[in-house]
Length: 135
Image (tube, rainbow, N blue to C red):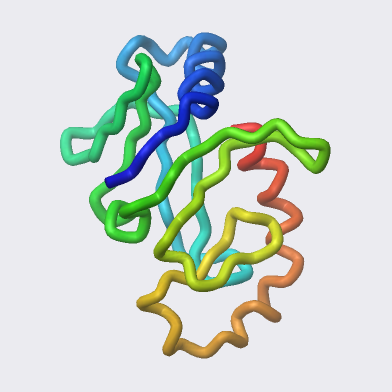
């Protein structure tokens, strides 16, 4: 199960009210190959697709594609407004290693792979930290 905190739901409603995406729109959260630790989160306002997992709380909708769902199972989606930055945060129990940017992680199934990819992507996380913090 994936959950959305009250703070994340409130911020998501505020975000969606500023877009002209329509009442069925939500925050799409996905996982793709890349980032310092091998996988990275993506976030954008989008319309639901027929095969999406949909999570709703207090009228706020999160959309997750079927390929990303196993990598996000058990996650808590939160929103933090801190001195170091504000944005949606994903607390993912499947992440065995995360990059300092918070947008890149290594899932448990990838632990056996060579960890040298971290050095190859060392500049990547600074570019995405701001992008995802202001999703």
